Length: 117
Image (cartoon, rainbow, N blue to C red; front, top):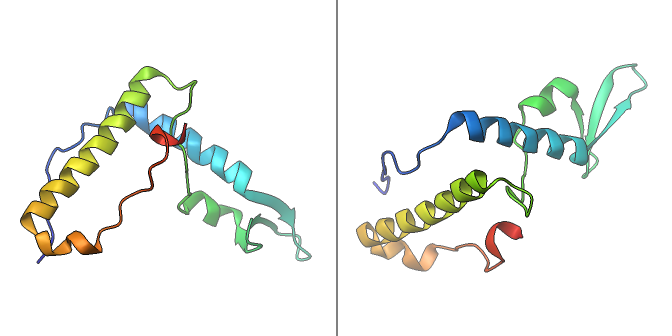
């Protein structure tokens, strides 16, 4: 049916990665929303597109994080995200071996420098 599972493809050090990603989300929320008080005296968050959200809703929403690491990131985080990138790519190649007809429909990322650095 086109679904393939690659079990244990990525080992996640949750004590390292989860707090780091949470800090990136907090940064994205701070940068992507302006907090305002509406005429009804409720507090809202307005995103870059001008859409208004309740504060509790933005905390549960997905965030678009462009760069997971930069030149100041610890080596173990750079290594983790580099491993993720390599594992996703190798898994994609394995998937194409199983379902070769999908090849013409796959768009891979643009060729930017590693992790947006």
